[in-house]
Length: 119
Length: 113
Image 1 (tube, rainbow over the protein chains, first blue to last red):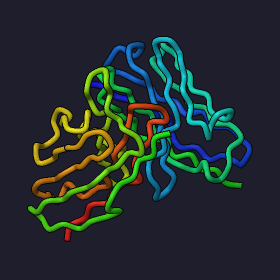
Image 2 (cartoon, chains in turn orange, green):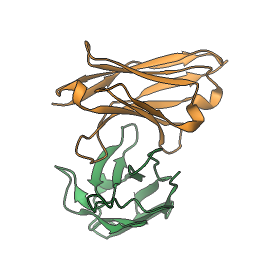
Image 3 (cartoon, one colour):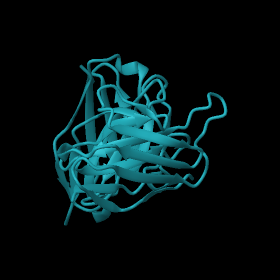
């Protein structure tokens, strides 16, 4: 069965960087894109961007341009999201999600990774 | 950018009654190439990731109970829970995946009255 398993929670100081991993299993990793979505405490869902595992094309939310990088490692079927220059308002649960190949939206989600930014 | 809005912010419905959530996009999400609306609905329960319920505005994802239905086209969409069950207490989000950024609506919280 399809699974996306994310890395554990992180506590970071303002200005630091964080790299969250998302290990996929149960499907052919290279044939789907991965999106990243975050959710601040008590708030809604914010789309951060996506990466095509097939051709490594990326598309990032404009507000995160320059601070976020999404990558993949096909040898381990793992996607990564790195966010730099962390601020307190980056505190959120970060989710990876598989982008359906048949244009059905995001059909599988990771369990989420809480990133806390605090001095 | 396409902006998504939802109404109401929250609603409380008696068990077995109908719940209706509205979603509006600032631009049409109807694709002229395949005549499909690139609009999805997700359910999120506390402490869990979102779950895909509906895609193409009205197609239920496999395994989703048939009390959930989606309708609408272009810019106006509706999610209906025909007979609310206790396990349906959650926040519901619409999302457009027609263009980037693939924005979500702000969410509608559904509770039991």
